[in-house]
Image (tube, protein in one colour):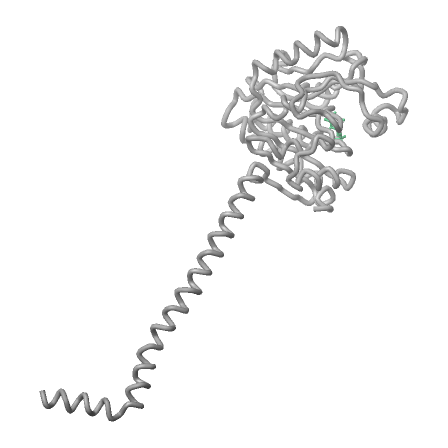
Length: 303
Ligand code: GLP
C-alpha cells in the first residue's frame, strides 16, 4: 500500500512528466483516428471511381477498338476474327458488305480458304444491300461485286449466298429479304461505313428500328459511289434496297472496318458513345453483342 502510495506520489509530484507521458499515450490514438479518416476517404474515392468506371465500361464494353497502321493490317485483323468464327462454327451465318473497304479482308479470307485454314462449304452469307435498277449481272451490281471479289474464289455453295434483289417488284423484294433474315440469325456482320456515317444504305435520319427497305440515296453517297461508274454521277443508281439498322443490330456480333481520313468524322461520332439517327453508324453503340471497330491510323486521326 505504502509502496503504491509512493508510486502515486512520485507520479503526482512529477506532474509535468506525467502529462507528457499522457500526451505520448494519446498521440498514437490521435494518429489512429487520422489514419482511419484518411483511409475512409481513400476507400470512398476508390469505390466511387470504381462505380463510375464500371458504368462507363458497361456503356462501352460492346465496342473493342483496334487501331492499326494501315489498310493491309486492318484487312488481316478482320479476316482473322472471321476465320476464328468459321473454325469454331463451320455452319456460321455471315453478314457481308460491299465497297472498297472489305476487298482486302475478302482477299485474306480467300488466302485462308486456299491454304485450307478455313472452309466456306457450310457457310451461309447475307449481304447488306443492292442497287435498285441494275441487272444482277451488271458489272457494278453488288451481286457481281461479291461474286468477283469473294464467291468465285472460295469453296462456298453459291446457293448459300444471299443478296437483296434490286430488280423486279420492289415491295416483294423487301418482304422476301426481311422474311429470309427473320429466319436466319447472323453470327457476324461485316460493315463498312460511308463518309456521312451510313451503314449498308441506311442514310442519315433512318430510324434505328427500320427493317429491310428501299431508299433514295443521298447526293453525298451518289457522288462517293460515282468512282465505280466512270465518275459519272448520272450513271449511279439513285435507289437501293438495304437491310435496315434493326436487321444489322440483330446480328450476334459485328465487325466495322474503316480506313482513310474521309472516315475519321464517322469514326469520331461512333466512338463518342452517342446513338444519333442522323449518324447511322452510331447505332452500333446500342448493339447488345460485341462490336469490333478495326480502323487504320488515318480513320482514327480525330479520336
Ligand atoms: C456503299 C455501301 C456501304 C459501304 C460504303 C462505303 O455505300 N453500301 O455498305 O460501307 O459504300 O464504301 P467504301 O468502303 O468504298 O468506302
